[in-house]
Image 1 (cartoon, rainbow, N blue to C red):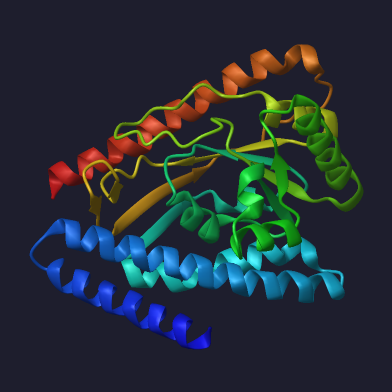
Image 2 (image 1 turned 120 degrees about the horizontal axis):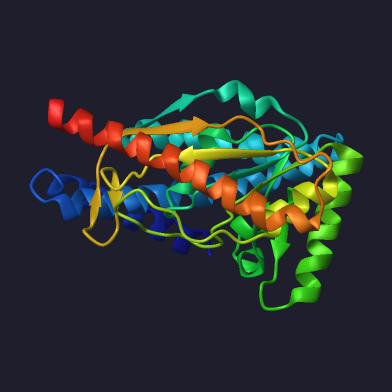
Length: 278
């Protein structure tokens, strides 16, 4: 078994090297080399995350397991693929507990979370990810809130558990309210689902919106483009939910999405202006 794993790793590393060389002449080579490098680092950091989660759980600090694993991934991947994040108003991430929300563009958002994810916070994820080797094990051990969207009763139970964690342990939650990756090449948002806002109101904590610039200039899967670059991020001011009820959710969802869309278009306009100037 060890022999097979060694051979696979050597083959994988060799493939990345060949694609990197081809990438000097073809953008598709750079695309696949960076994609393969990211997946390898992701699985490696997930394996590290399993060990870190178990160790931190033993000493009673599992609430920072996702933070420390995310930072490890960011510290390895960002220099390798040449991506930087320019974060504005990062101090607003210090609110605890809170429900953090952000737009969801592609698989690269995992790297974004690695850069910006606050301590004492857990992500939400679809239940099927729980069964992926290493990644799913890490997510389960580190306190991920798994949502079964096909089972409303199970989903409600998961959110009830999240409310208890927020109230009892001051554990924040990070949710992508679009519910899925958009893959937009322009600044836009999918319709928001209401779960994050119900959760914030039930727990009595603020919503903290985080807007990530449209980064199709860095990663565009349909065009097989994956280039180095800087991605701008704006952490918006916390939205107080004190005194709100379920009857206020629709208005809160609409207002928050509209404000995030304005910020998103502003960040993307800055990107266009920079390209024109250069």
